[in-house]
Image 1 (spheres, one colour):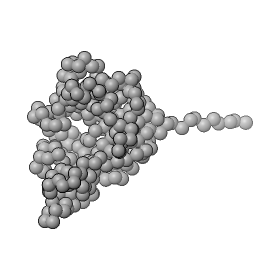
Image 2 (cartoon, helix red, strand yellow):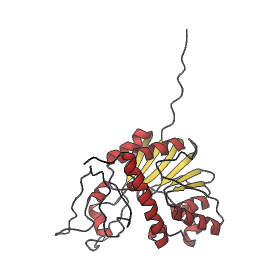
Image 3 (cartoon, one colour):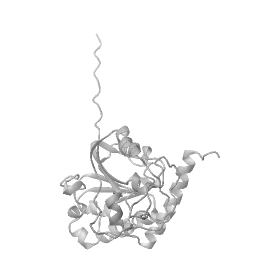
Image 4 (tube, rainbow, N blue to C red):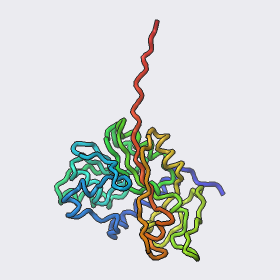
Length: 277
């Protein structure tokens, strides 16, 4: 059977996930719940440092920085970075997720630039514009991430920081529930290129979405090939001693669900002077 063209697979995933996230936003799932008063009382504190064990990946002060919150609608990231002093642009695929940002900005009297679009097509944004790109978990919703990283590399300044989080490939390969003996089994090959089979709603999978596995070669190597230097990597700790088998915290002890990456855009090499005798 002939495989569909790559662009057809991409377009289908974008259309599917746009509709799915509009529905999820309407249902008020945890990822579509705006930040509350406690977060806005100390926005920089809520944003944290990003790195492992409290190590800071973010600048101490965000005042005046141009920040892109990529695939980050939902009323949290963009409004909080803006409340902490940054000039923020939010790009998200789903209109309903952007509407949550718009409502929070109106309520909190925060300035945000809200743009509907896919994370792998940032042609509406000027090259070299951003000091910092914040990219929550979302690369799993596209079949190809190389273009995403090339687009981020284009819009970020030389030396700019790119902080992103991704679903771990091994976690997406594995069963959501343990087999006999309490162990989790790898069920999908890393090379699986089709959307993953649907699973019951959980913290591991967003219901109704199409998700794709991306290898570490695609994620970390893709950033390097796009022009980034990976400076740090961590797997956020979600395991808890004594957690019930099958729970999110129990599974995290075997399969960390996320990978968080700090990367820096390589500065352009200075032009070489040519001496003509």
